[in-house]
Length: 248
Image 1 (cartoon, rainbow, N blue to C red):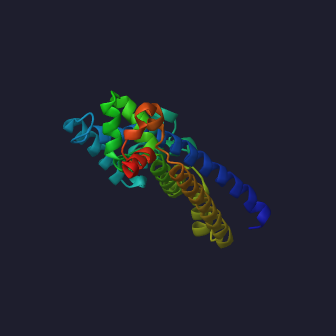
Image 2: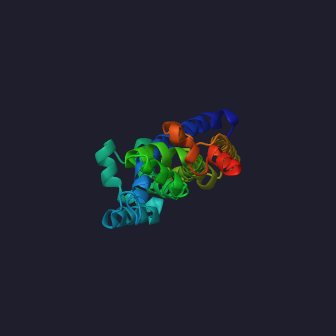
Image 3: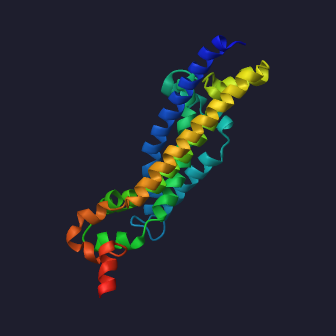
């Protein structure tokens, strides 16, 4: 196969991968973020402690995460047809990709939120902050660098999942490498596709790590301190508090 024959195939596969991974990542973040926060809020000792709700959500997330993606695609065919009107194509592949990514990202969000200093939450509550204020001004901003890292991990995982999209005719780079490299013995095209995937994943990982480091250095959780500026000096872990301790 010549380059002129490979080029349109590679371009179409790149667009298909970007389309599927981009939309499924967006849906996973929009749905997985509140789900992960809810898991933390409803756990024992959480701000909205509810053991029953926490167990139900946790079991749903565990079941969805434990299901192999190829099985998930088959199991969701009826739901996919109801949403998109078809079970074939990249739009059809988008549904199981998003459904599979939501619980994956939710667990990463849960882990990130748990890393937030409990002293900040108690300080905001002692100043009359509601649960919504704690979530919006403390939990999410403080865990933002970790959330960015989690989103990066989700994107990389989705690129791997998208390789199975060929099962439903979704296309993409992984499907191209499998169909032409393995089934038609086009070894050169397969290695070019693998190289493109490696470059794309490296760029995404670098960008995610860079964004997370920048936010961490800037102290991504400064929002609640700005909201409660009059009491900033007594908040634990702040520069002002450390200054008071040293001079005290």
